[in-house]
Length: 312
Ligand code: SF4
Image (cartoon, rainbow, N blue to C red):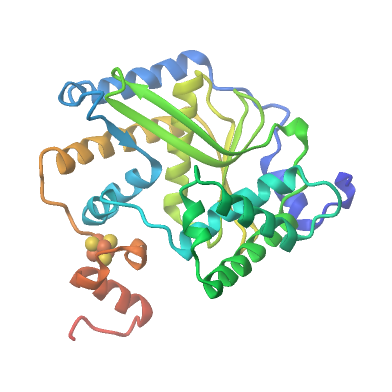
């Protein structure tokens, strides 16, 4: 397909992610200054950790610790697959298969292959969950995944090999002899080191915290490679809109502050036993503590009925 044949949504993605002719990368000395800030900010905490009992930091943990600390602690005790969270995994697999698909892409065929491969793959933790789904739930998952993959196929221009697309790209930055480990898994990256675009695909609307999550990805990429990515984008498949941010020194500094602050909170909560601060928000809807949390229940009631009072 030539660029003149792209539909309006695909053209918009191309324009949102493309490199401006006057773009210049962040100088290496700036990246090294950011590294010093990050290490200095955590230097007093690191000796309290060990490589065997290390702290693992992900975007999800940072988001929850800056959101509701009780939710953060609840999320540490175990992760469970649900129809809601596994559909993203199926989408990513379908995108990966679609990139290498021979012939005309029929979304249902690609999704069926993605489901079959995931269900057969015991190394994938989603595999047994998908394999053991009752027929009705599997049909529901298939339907949701076809919807998402169809949207991706409609919204994104065909990924050219020259753009170096990588799906589910894992990255890690180990600090203080593996006592603190920052890890990421980007939905999609395009471009080479030093001018990468990191893209998070969202099945719902883009939320304010998505920008902060991608800034953490930019920080890990910059610390791991010594070169910052060029641009960050949260792409909502439901609205066909991208929230795009260029990576600047200010973006990396904001990410350092958020990361250092978040790590310190994690140590206080997980290692020192500090009482968690409860803060309601959009994340209450998915919180495992919702049924027993008065704060979260009130928030959901107010959200669903803005005229409601707190008197029950
Ligand atoms: S329901 Fe909301 S306020 Fe309550 S613990 Fe969970 S996230 Fe926090």
